[in-house]
Length: 278
Length: 187
Image (cartoon, rainbow over all chains, first blue to last red):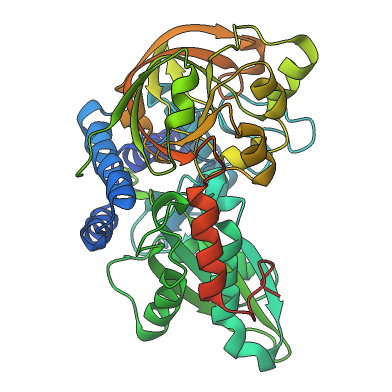
């Protein structure tokens, strides 16, 4: 009985993970599509308008053909929400990894996961520590996937500010985007993690990308306006919108620290959540 | 969209010299995908196709059963130090996203252009493409050279053969907007 239950959990998780991955790489969330439509409407110049025309046509083509929006289907970042009745066990990680392997052939995904030093490609988007699985307490048993492309990930940053430098947070955010130029496929979404420790700030920044981007609080709006004054525009070709949104997530930190992490995300802010049928 | 896109077909010749940064182009004909690893391989073992008038596409596609599923551009800046030998061999166009540096801008002068294709638009790209072959398949899906026939892929000239660079102009403006306190290293 015990064996049976364990296998079923693994299968149910694999199925949910595979479905979430398919949905994430093909269909953009509604809030992201709305933000892109708004950004498109704000442009008057020929070059940025052409970029948005391609982006809009691409979103439609992916949905119509049932194929990935972008050939960089990313590395799998996974958030597992566990309600009290689901026990924490290694089966959870096995089930998620199996789902990623299934999605790699079924969707298909581009095999992106390699050993960091030998650069050997596993061929199935899994490897040591990959998928990156984050387990959280939750009310419903869900799998959330955030396939993360390299173009935007490569220009992300962590800065250890001093407690007296809170006024520099905006400079860090704007500076990250200025250094990134057109490389992360703007208009970007910026996840900003503030506080925690050296390692938690980037995790907060990544998790911030899961929040709805069609609303921002006053601080987020202020950061977003500052980034948009750069005029980098879609693909670095110039335009009014460089960031669709800035989303901030905070955690308590040491009285002598102020970690600030900026996780840059391309316009294709892909993520999807599927309930595990178990 | 006020101006109609300029129609070009590979192999390209001196018509690339008349293009201006910001021109909209629809490109047809054969192109060759290439990313970091195959640039290194071609420098060692030679270019496996006729480079004269050829166009290189910075792209690592998703291919399944010999069909192009998704094939948007990758970040061209990673090839900043790797593109000179291709241009010396007669390549007349590079396609990618995000632009390239001053070294490449110099190398393009008087002979070739850099086309920008919208990053992330892989499904749209695939709908303008047919797969014709592959070189260096041992490098794997993302890094091999895929031979692709384009049918009017919508591009914009990012860097022209006269040194005009849309990305460079935008970056200069962005630096000024960020102010003197803001270095590119954000410290």
